[in-house]
Length: 102
Image (tube, rainbow, N blue to C red):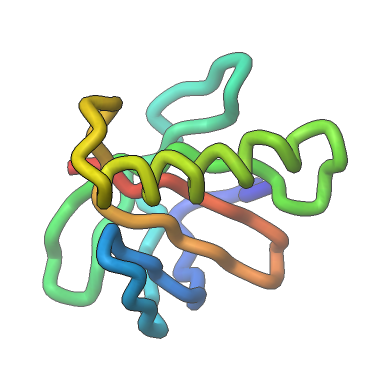
């Protein structure tokens, strides 16, 4: 998990249409934490700000949360009325999966 901010992380960004691209996000600061992970203020290279709800991808106890990110992304594509988020951001090092929300 992210220890210090600000930090730039490069990873793969998946959108609701199944497209993926390399992206660098700057994690500005931690906004909060709870039972389902930590939330960070992030921005992209264009300066657009988002909230990133992040899970440690290496933790076996949190693997279900990572699977849930992608399941929710698929449900949104089918028009399901669930908590809206825009993308899933996956980083290899540190092993991290985030839901990116407006």
